[in-house]
Length: 248
Length: 369
Image 1 (tube, rainbow over the protein chains, first blue to last red):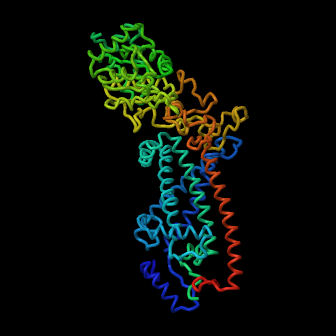
Image 2: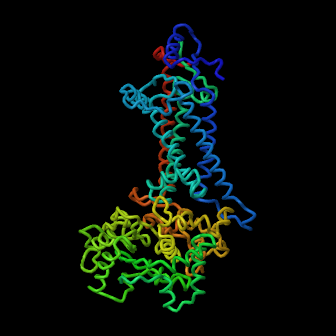
């Protein structure tokens, strides 16, 4: 599947990057970063999150009442069905994505790894934060996520979405009933939240956390695409990251 | 007291016919979800087994559990169950008082060591050495510990004993504490509800007497047969929920039509109890059937999960009470504004850089196309 794609390490690629600087004068450098499973997962997951947030909101605050016989309508039922389906897509996607973190290239692992003990990492987080705070004229170049993005990815997205999947499964168990396979999640979560209402509340707050993450994520991607020195959005489509100012 | 009397003896002594007795047995079997054959087994147990003494203690509570229990719907249940168990101590309804009443506790503890049930209504407050609840001149927590120490099992009646209920709601000034956090070495059956359903209470007792064992409990210690489903799962208004038909105002047309009370803050979807199947007052009705949402009285901490009339719970950690949507919406608004401001500054900066590039070239590695 990755016939034309080299399986080289990130160091090789960065080495290439510097070689490219010397040898390829005007050409842009491009590196294959996101393999197809990662890209597929990203967009399927994005669609799932959109469906989950919209239907989730309408589960908590339903649409205006429908007239007519109850047997003629199934609006709330469809909304909940869409929510559960998208939830399972997200959960299955997360399982696949975690698998790919082991099977895929080094960039596939970034979302789950936080180099907490690395001083270099935190220094570069600071540098990136300064770039966003307009205190630096130019950001550093990264093949994958920059350190600040990686920090947000791991702490908000990865932890947050796993939290949403586990609490979501526990909520699903309430309808699926005792003895269902989802009871495991229920038994795991309920002692921590005390009761089902609290579980609903934190799951709802989790939705807002993900929404805020998505807002920042989309903004940062668009902005970086325009302002920084590498491609962003097209990278998640094609997999190739273009470096705009190389070789000049 | 040591005289062994079977349930059947007591029943007949009270003038109840054998026919009524057998009816009760088959009804009990049905209410416990058992096969018809178990009716005969219950009857046999009642005829042969000695009555189990029950010591019914009252801590911080409002007696609504007792009120519910004595109204147990089926007349036989009321007449029989109160006599079936040998209710040797219940300071609210017993004839004896004072030292004579308290002496019964010691008597039962010694004569039936390890063979009686401690039924606890209410809970002990632990602040100020338990001085907020005094029974017989001593803190209730001492009486509770003594009586439970020799019991074979403990039944926590109601939300007070099971979870803490209103007296344990924030900020819980008396440190009212549920029974399972004080009694750590005995099996405890929680029968939550404020009050619990009468038939659930008598059902639990009947089960223990019949089978000589505890009913199967869920992870939180409640009998599975009554607390494994939500009100919502068996609610007769559920079709309106699935259809998206809701009461929007208390006096609107939808309310008259009996639509779902979800938007009026019904806690049925988060409350585990048997109200929508067993119902109340002899199966006459239950809150939702009467047009009012469930307030979730059998759930842990339900007083702190207000308001009763809103689906979204207030999150107390935020000084001003706000629900998840208000908190999340505010954060998203602030972040959105921040993004807009950041984008504006970015655009200005980029424009300035571009004009700067034309005058003085930027460092070689950073020039743009």
